[in-house]
Image 1 (tube, rainbow, N blue to C red):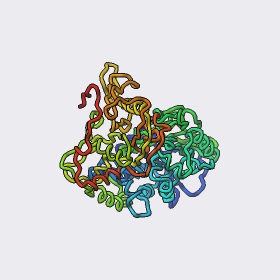
Image 2: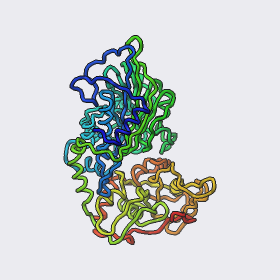
Image 3: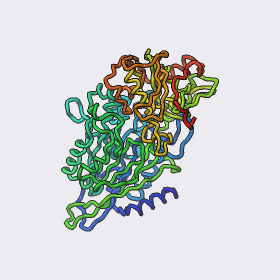
Image 4: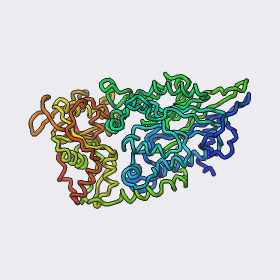
Length: 568
């Protein structure tokens, strides 16, 4: 039964989108799956509306549960989007296609436990998606994080295709399916998938081990669209794990790797596309049109469902469908009931995850906070830095303050707290860099701050917080009143000014070492340490070893702004 909130959303969406679908469902076929029988010609004058429902960047949020705080959440989770999708299907039987734009298998403790801790063969994320009857998904860059064998095992369990037209074996052969065609009662819907080439930077080692490379999205999608059109697709849907048109987070010119965010370019340059569902940027777009193509993006973490309505009219000959301009809307997941089937599919790993993250691993008598970690040097950041530096045996170490809500103590420290402190599955590496590279590194990091036209200092919201790095092992100050490129006011190593020809070893995560976040100055820096150790696990191991940790054991005030920030 539709909840009042959902009924209102669907009714409003239906009115806005002019959804008027009345197509009979083939016997024995679930509403989410296409009929197995060939399509029949349409009837002259017949009209219909095809509805696309989409999710993206779920990052393991199968359930509405915050594993860091160990409490329920009411605004997200596939359990809630499943309820929305089922309601849309009931409102428009037989005419709904459910798709996902990637980044499913990594991103929270549930996904980590599923990949690394749980000893069951079935992937609970895929099991949940199977229960929701997805029709297709595109491979996201985070699908490679746990290695290609894990991704391939997950794909093998899916009752829907994973698409990536631009991923190739070293031999040049396609690594994954590029396209699929879904039939909806006489309407052939061609689906083409493409994923961001940034994986060549961020998961270089995993791709290298599997002999894979991610090429430019645009030509691969163009070929895929031509292929499905040639096979008789009446409607073409493109799934992209790629942002709209944001700048790439890496140097595309120097690296030779194609652009990261090209959804708008695909819509503008590839003819024959009716709808693009895109993700990756963790934003939300209820619908914008470029040329004849509608683009939509649901909010990440299963926080909303994006829907597109595509009007169809049979031509006078009864031989083909004419496709009208698509329109889009968003339905928020907040407050919707959780689907029992998805709850059931994820229950075992959900319980395992709670048991895992609530396990105490040590203690501290004081409160460590990260809330000001991007405004001043704090012990919590230095804890990460010192663990990295010691593990790699490096002169220096770098990290970002990933989550300003992270904290430790007072009292018992759990794995959940360590996971919130370091939420990514990065591994530790160390590189040899020069004094010139170090200065460039620190200056580039400072672009997180900018001045507005009145001269007031503010955060540049186009720069992600996880791309503001701090470095330990040297003493430095940043003058944010200066232009970028001249912001490092002082830089000392053991009390002496750092000169361009100085040489240091720098411990850092694998994402940054490969240039992630645009840190192009690290390109070519020799790797001197790489044991494939997860940094989060190193933090857990340090707390377990020490049993009780104290700020004084890690904190060394070594960096500051020349003029204190107002936020301090």
